[in-house]
Length: 487
Ligand code: BG6
Image (tube, rainbow, N blue to C red):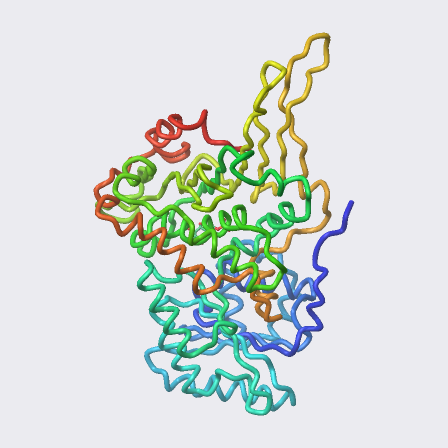
């Protein structure tokens, strides 16, 4: 078996101090601190590393860590050795964005730390707060002289910005403008955690490292592409955010369009962040925007039954959508992309399937199309469906899969998306982060749906929890395809 993971030379990373704003929030408890603890356990953190967690609550470093450990069941397994080593690197800082003057002490803490260590630490800031606070945060960093790492080295600080990155094109543009007032593009790391998933990173490798696929990767051979992101869970305690957002803005604008871009892009000239992002941008700009007619015919939205009860009132916010779009590039002319996502469905799965056309002339009865499926999660794998002969005296066909399952090939855990992205952030590698123009192109497409009056008028069909979504969506897809593809 191939030993897989944790080959990064993290300990060669420069001395780093990572400051997380919004450290007592859900994101931090569910993803960031667990990722950092796991990195501690696997010796992936830089040798000289300090973590400053900023929150409003009155806590100290020890009680902060206990607070996080209590919130996250998965962290109960973390050994006491790891916890105590981690605690040595952790400082909790109580700060209130409404009182910017309270952050003078943060600046002092960071510079005292550098002086005590006789080192100029790389300063990284993670904005895990509400987006409405980004502006005050950037101003605080500027006013406190924290935009450079230290006066001696003048290394630029970096900032990682959590989603949601705006709620439409206009707000995303303002946010970009605001950040670019304080930072240069190469200091800004806009995160989409799907980009950090191992299986999403594999998309470019499968496409461009195998001579098998690229010659067929066009409208002559591909019939259609499907991307499904299905979730079993509901909106839980995020009702306020979600009800303003809905499934299309929550999932299509970022995760699904990012995966679509990786499936549809041309091979970049090289693997630099700029080249990769240029190619993704070309796809995002070429998405076939919606008009009223397309909203009627190419989109279905739904809402799970108990949603209004959870939100506490009447609402048309969609917790499910299914749509068909096209990429207006010669390679993809006429190839539909079917995209769907929803909450409280029968299973949790993220899959991308590329459906090839059937042979122009099939000598045998029962030929079916080849389908290349990327199972992004869970049970990470890649399948290729091919036609085979059933053993026996006749010629009957059977569709079987060539299959590569991560768990059967690689031993070891797959690092979480956040671990990968945090390491890249520390290393200063922007390849898996989203550039301002990509975000804006995605919003332009999403706005053509969600900002249209036809979208508000379109029905939101109610569906039972634990099903495949609204019946109307099944009827809609049946007009084009036999049914949705899932493994
Ligand atoms: C987030 C969405 O970006 O991704 C959530 O806001 C969603 O609504 C989550 O549940 C899913 O992430 P994952 O990694 O569990 O598939």
